[in-house]
Amino acid sequence: MKVVSVNLGRPEPLVHGTTTLRSAIRKRPVKGPVEVGAESLVGDDVADHRGHGGPQKSVYAYPREHYPFWKEELGDVPLPVGVFGENLTVEGVLEDDLRIGDVLGIGSAELVVTRPRLPCVKLNARFQRDDMIDRMLANERSGFYLGVRATGILQAGDEIRRLAEAPSALTVREDFRRRAHST
Image 1: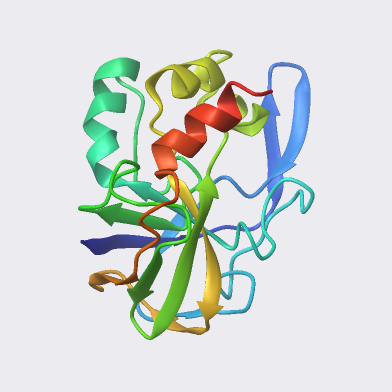
Image 2 (image 1 turned 30 degrees about the vertical axis):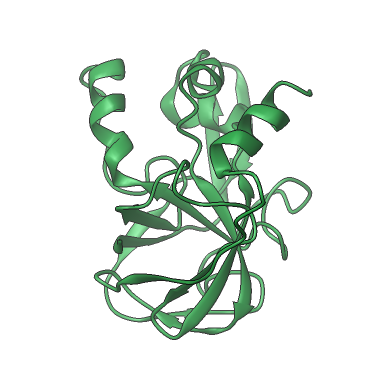
């Protein structure tokens, strides 16, 4: 398990059809060490603090293993790392591998798996498609949010270590199914 890329973004206009949203979903990879603050990666921001960020949604991780699926699903759409709005593009850890409450060590930071990401309208806008929310709900490739248990420094290439497990908790995928079908 490792970090493939660390991706940061700032709020900017995002146009979809006749609607202009403000979003930081356009994450870009950065080189070198990045500080993990109490509620986010330093240098990253969110536009809508009601739906993103905060102690339960400090860092968003998305498995690189999902990228080939999306490439086949979407065709010629460019898929650079960070395209799903993730802060961490990760490898070797999927939604079925983690449980809510598991603690991960990345670099010198300690992060807690808090919940799956549920897609919002900004995903449709990012991909300039009206069906991305439905596609993500159908294929359950959600990625997961991490809360910060201990601040520190991380960077691309860092190993992801499982420091503690929550064996009786739902997996990220199970929690995604529960949340996606209760709305």
